[in-house]
Length: 345
Image (cartoon, rainbow, N blue to C red; front, side, top):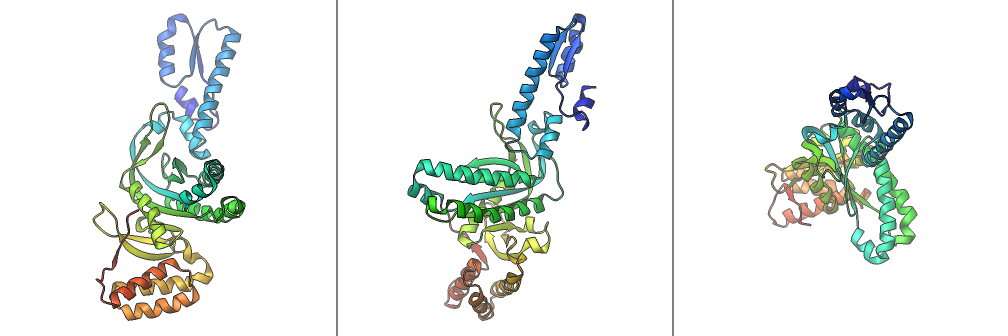
């Protein structure tokens, strides 16, 4: 009965208090173990019953407030129906997004700790709102970085798309945040975002004192490395082929390069999210991929010609400038390597 009440979408999230005869204590204990909130012996004092109900509701509200900080509403409702949902470590197919505020240390030195906290708190509040609005679970905050996850604790076949759409929404919001804080922090607010999809073990990686629900494993580590690659490749949003293969061409954008990642045997293909969704950039994306293919086939002159024309039209294209540098280095006799090695740090 208790399980049916808890799992029913029509009953909400009620407080369940068992009222039983004194000789039915064992049955009452079983009821509490199966999800009841409290127990009273018959005849139950009405004032005491109301007090127990109010206390139980306060506990539910406190749990709701805590969980709503990192779980979207649709997932939160299911978690409240199953109190053990977050406590069961299990494998899951997920998409992990790592978002980092660029230039945080320099800004902190420039404006001081008090103003830095006010600024970064406002930025993280906005990023958190966007993540939750896009159905994501907030995994952690580490300084100037936020990690989010899609696909757990409730499975979603569209988790890669949801993560990508969230990343695009964040970058759109960055413009408003930058405008809001530019005069205060003395520069633009910018983000670097990395996304990876794959298997991870998800569960409470925190403690009984403080829940930290999230994923562990190579999928998470690679998402973090991809975020770091945005700095070197001068791109705002990058994703792995594992994520790119799950979204349509408009989101997938262009393949940027193949990179070596520590402790991963095969090179990782990186894609630039959404860059080619803008009509005025689609031709440039196609040209870049032609140049990249030419470079990887050691057709350096062909790659250089394509890149030269591309950079005339889009001189601020970071990946194109880096690719041109590699082409020129190879033409000057440098060691040719189609796989890029990312610098440390």
